[in-house]
Image 1 (cartoon, rainbow, N blue to C red):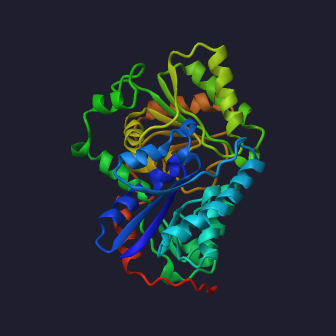
Image 2 (tube, rainbow, N blue to C red):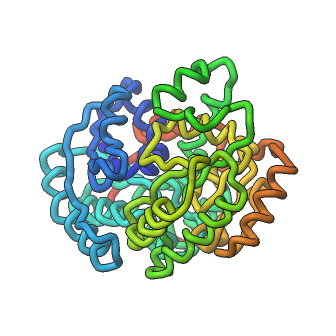
Image 3 (tube, rainbow, N blue to C red):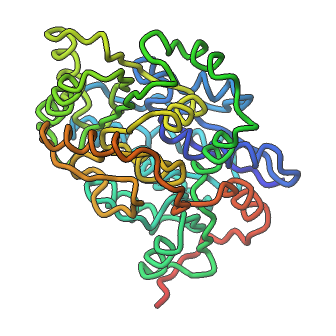
Length: 384
């Protein structure tokens, strides 16, 4: 059996790889190893590791690698700390292949450690364009990886244009869409009140009424401007005063600026219509996306899951710039007037037709099958 080591470092990481973990766990020719690290271990970011274990996955190792501060310096140092710790984990687990996700700074530490240790590296969600430091990290990890699992044909073509062997590039779809497809199936849903009460949601929203779902993260290349950016969003929400569910930001550089703006708003404004949450299970978050009147902020969920669900979305700022998107998205600047106008337009429009831009719901199974059968070769050469 091939030992497949999946590194989970954040709530976004987990939602992006859970279906692969599940498929690998069930595959007769694979042995799943799970490593949890970074913000996935921290309570103030939702302690995602608890969800991982509750879902039936055994965590083989925990890697503490976050240096407090959430600025460019601590983000770089956290990457370095991950690079110090992960080699020891890989040496103990002796995986046949390591799987890493997307474009976060923890992904870079995982990729470098595996590459230097001659462990074949598989990368999901590569080849996409989005701007900011995320795009640079994503393409750098592509060049360190040996097996590529892009979500769509356009991403695959970019990977090949970067000189990667076409035989190592497998268009499988995005694993995040697997969970969305399951939950969107009306016959596969929990009773609504059960999951609302389980997550502590529901006191201020009615699923039969319109409500907003908001998630806005720092843009690392615009470090220092986060408080102003989130204030524009919050003041737009304050003018609308619709029932709103809002998540705290992720751990990227500038997170404290966003959180400070949220705390100031909470202290100085009446906000009974608005509640803040650290984290939701993947299943609950998808259900909220499916039922919300509009998704607001700069999370990739509006771009990836949003088209599949037909979810109206208002994307704010540059964090998702140039990423392929569906007709469900309206792009605006960090301006409360633009944000209000776009939300009102989406409320009038309502749900959109489903657009499966990022997959059909079977990526996890495809990835597990390929990991079990593909040739594992650490030798890389540029192809043209």
